[in-house]
Structures are given as C-alpha cells and as structure tokens.
Image (cartoon, rainbow, N blue to C red; front, side):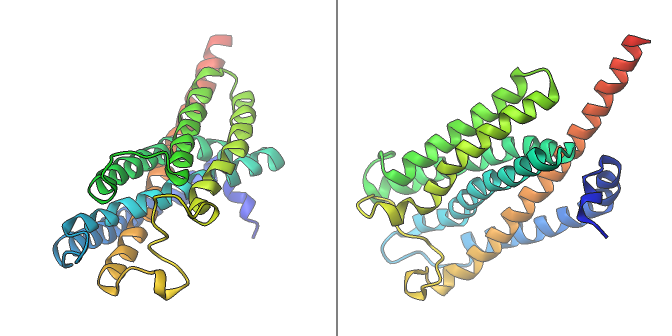
Length: 242
C-alpha cells in the first residue's frame, strides 16, 4: 500500500475523521497531566525558584516552533516534487500554529529571562534567530493571503519555507555555534550531565509529548478546513461559469 494514497483529499478526510477524537483525547491527557505535574508536583529550583517551571511551556513551545517549520519544509518539498495539493494545504495549515508556538516561546522566554538575565530581551544569537523565524512565519502566512492563484501561492510560499529553514536550524543549534550567547544549553540532551534534574525531566517529556499531539491535532483540523474551503471555491467557480 502506497503512502501517497493519503495525499488524495477524499482519502485524507476519511482517514482523519476517526483519528481526530483519539488525538484530542490523548492531547488533553498528556498536556493537562504534564502541566499539572510540572507546575504543582515539582519543587522549586534551588537557584531559579518557581521561575524554572516556565520550562514546561517554554521548552515544548520552542521545540514545536522549530519542528513546525521543518514539517512545512517537508510538505513543501512534497508539493514541489509530487504536486500533491494536500501537502501544500498542510504546510499552509501548520504556519499559524507554528507562529503561535514561536510567539509563546518568545514570550515565555522573556518572562523566564528577565529574573535570570536582568533583562526582558537581549540580541542573543538564539533569541535573534528565533525572532527572525517568527518574521518568516508572518511573511509566509501573508504571502498565502496575498496571492490569489492557489498553485502559484504554494510555489512561492514553498520557496520562502526553504529559505526560512536556515533560521529554523539556527534557532535549534545557535547555542552550539555561538558559545558566548546568554541562552542556556539544551534542557534535554544525549549527554546526561546537561539534562535537567529527573524531577523536572519526566514532566517535561510528558508536556513535550502533549505539545506534539496538540500541534498534530490542530494541523489536521486546519488542513481539513483548507480542503473544504478549496472545494467550496471550486463549486463557486463552477456556478459562476454556469
């Protein structure tokens, strides 16, 4: 069975209809449980106090901000290579979700950074690249709205996505490229010495899983909406010609 069969809009709608209730239930369970665990059942940090608990929102949001753009990159490449409309619509659907995640990461980072660094914002390499990534999200969304012809809009936004992927990668690895930045190292790492304490690690992993499922659920809902809107426009065009 070929995976490309799910690029058919009718098949995509058929598959996602029963999947969405399950995804929403798992999202509520993991996200609600992870946040409750992190905010109410973990102790304050000996250095950062209760402020450290912002990581249960900041880290998953930052993770999804970057990976949402990478998902858009994959979908854009599929559009370029296979010309499957569902992939283009999925990329379009993911953009507002990714932009929201980026904004949440920027806002929670400022709230977390102010007591730690003594400032709400610094032109740290990772912060700067993350801010530029947010601007790319806004530009991507605006370009979709500005171009009336759907296939042309998909082509142009795919190019923007390719260029913006540089900043998505910089946002992820800036702390390794520029060691003099203010931003701390990764909270989760293959090197156990760099990880947060286990008391924070486990609820953080649950929160991250919840954010992943939240992203998937929202993108599926928005993609289904985009498919319906495209069908509606096609019907309106037929009526206008008739």
